[in-house]
Length: 212
Image (tube, rainbow, N blue to C red; front, top):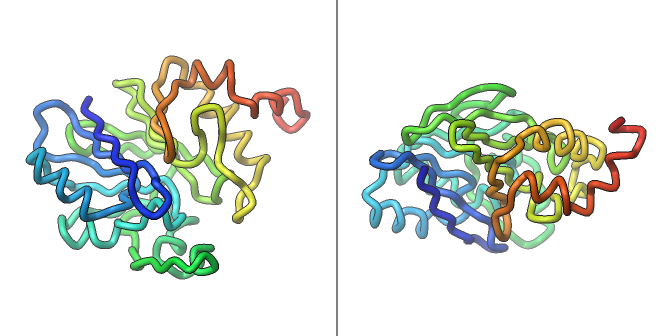
């Protein structure tokens, strides 16, 4: 599996280009800069056919509309977060950011499998950071793209319409079941599920009655 990591956009979100070796097509996860991604696609001789969004926050969908216009790729997001990507409701307006609205072509659901770039992405509903947050697991490669649900030794914030209880449930009952997987998060460096099960500070919540 080939993964190109591009930290980009207004607050350096990780955009990913993912494809199987030898494939001429690819998926782009959380496009934050359509121009940079487009340049990279041309350099690698790749065609983006699928735009996969882990959630609707502006920094992860910043380039989605322009990338779709440039490539004709279809946009996938969970229905609960689709209004944010479409510019109908979000928090970026309070931060003096503007967003080119991007409407979804397909809504994601738990267990759905999306074939793109010679890979199969399994949708995991992981609410908490946002109501419609998802992760994309490539099970054959033991890789998971977690957006802002899980970072290296951290997790996403929950004060922008999220829920700490839902986030911890997603972490402990879904992501922590992925033993041996490499994690590609929405910001900063990659990590592993095994590392997070040992060192993530949020593990103190595992003894809380909510998650017993």
